Amino acid sequence: MRIFNKTKNKLVAEHVEVAKTFKEKSEGLLKYETPHAMYFETQWGTCPVPYAEHKTFAEKLKHILRNAIRPVVDFPLLWCGVHTCGMKFPIDAIVLGERNVVKKVKRDMQSGRFFFWNPKYKKILELPAGSNIETGDVLELTK
Image 1 (cartoon, helix red, strand yellow):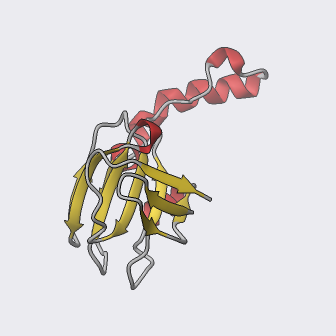
Image 2 (cartoon, rainbow, N blue to C red):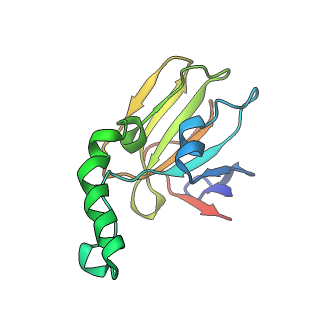
């Protein structure tokens, strides 16, 4: 993925890793020795598909169980938070809203820090510290 700041007309990052699975999101940037960029989306605990749209009994049962236990089982960091415990380099955490407008920036997160945001925002960027992104900037994310 590539990230371009449309507000400042500047390339922010290329070769951005996209974390999709639970494992990828949990590990984040911990596996790297040098700064990298990562993008991921969070999901507040419940099933995103309405119950009525599930067709089989198994799908409906899975929906009910997922909604019942997931908010209890999931750790809040998976919904609306990141940590830098064990990180070998500082990062900037960027929270994006609708149309990829930057809603919150946490700069220069050193190892051992936590950052939480409003769970209504689901798009998150972790960039090497010094990204020079400001609240209100509009970013373009391309594959």
